[in-house]
Image (cartoon, rainbow, N blue to C red; front, side, top):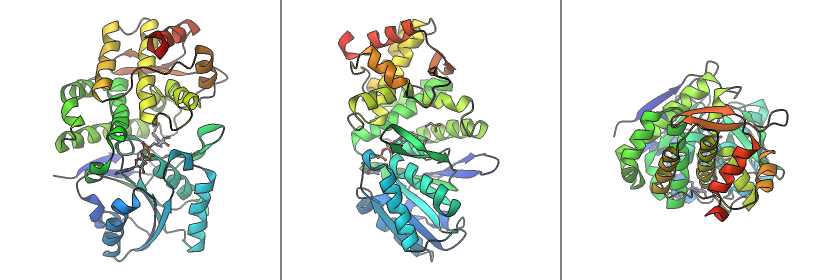
Length: 364
Ligand code: NAD
Ligand code: GLY
């Protein structure tokens, strides 16, 4: 399989995303970008036994010295404490300003390593090697880095771009089905927000993608990365259209927080959240019932939840009021004018109530 290349054209920090097979053993793709022959690889206890040795071997064959930092696995470890473990390890080994951090893992490792790179010695180079579908299509691209705080998810972080993203399709072979489906929520999101052709393509090919057919998977990841690259190049710091990438996330974050982080995966909450956003868009006269059904059917074929938990209207609204997109106290929603055209807007309370009534468990 040919390696596909997507360029992210951010003026002050351009970089490539490479999508292909066996990339973890091709350290020559990395070595030319390093300011010194030294890296620190950050990963976790699940991914290390699967992929760390192969990556280290291929880097060492290029004469690159590798420090290995292995963190506990899980969203609950996306914390100050884990960030501090990275800092302790880097300082203990006297990592330098030119030492490159490599994130080997899903979005949790990518977000934390990126933030560590942004602040260690006021900024060191970093490379993303995403190993989940969600990370390959979304979190590894665009430079959002963060840790969680007990009072809010991703509340402490920085915009800090990687120098390279290596999306190795082979690493997806060990990804559990539930995690694969969670990544599909973000894939479907790109079709809904501004790429109706991609949405049609997904509807035609969803069964093959769910069977992880290699060419279809490569095509899907490339198209998602092209969309994300275009959006972040136009609006790196989310002053405008980048917020469209949060379709389903305002409702989704409320589901995650309301159920307790970890009960539902992020992608699962985004899937149910996109259904709520579709119902809300129907309530204000943009989508038809058939449009909403198309969204539901596609998500169901990706084996994602489409019915939201019954947290209660007041609880949903309180949780959504804590979202990062709240502006001067007003909740900004990502809504659909039609399938494949999202916009940022506000919702009358009656539309929120209608969406929750249609999309939550108790209503069924
Ligand atoms: P994750 O990083 O927790 O990975 C999911 C699970 O899969 C973990 O247990 C992980 O160890 C395991 N895993 C990873 N790769 C594997 C592989 N190849 N084989 C077997 N197991 C593997 O979760 P995620 O879904 O990748 O990322 C979610 C995180 O990403 C959240 O913290 C979210 O806030 C963040 N996120 C960030 C952005 C961004 O723009 N920065 C965008 C979306 C999501
Ligand atoms: N995942 C949303 C963003 O990168 O902006």
